[in-house]
Image 1 (cartoon, rainbow, N blue to C red):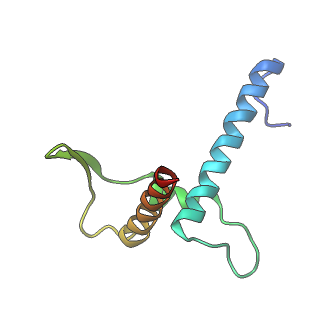
Image 2: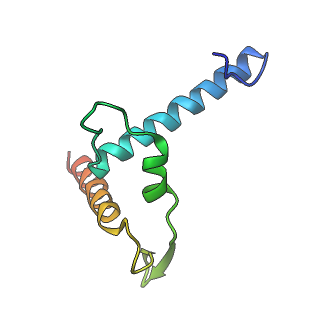
Image 3: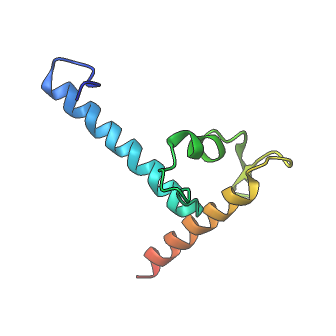
Length: 98
């Protein structure tokens, strides 16, 4: 709790909720991308996830009414990103069917 930004209990509660949400989003991104922890049981840090999946050097364009992601052709994390995107789309379809 030494990282709490304020003396206000309500502000600290909001900050803690945001920190937990960010942590959970990073971990779910790790699971959906198929990135597993190292063999020596050290957890994957957020920077490992953030670099290839959150700091995406691309943009969303509208192709005939369909949003399409345009990424660089020589982007080194293209395959893991498209695999994670396929997993998210499959998850959305599974939820829609049930």
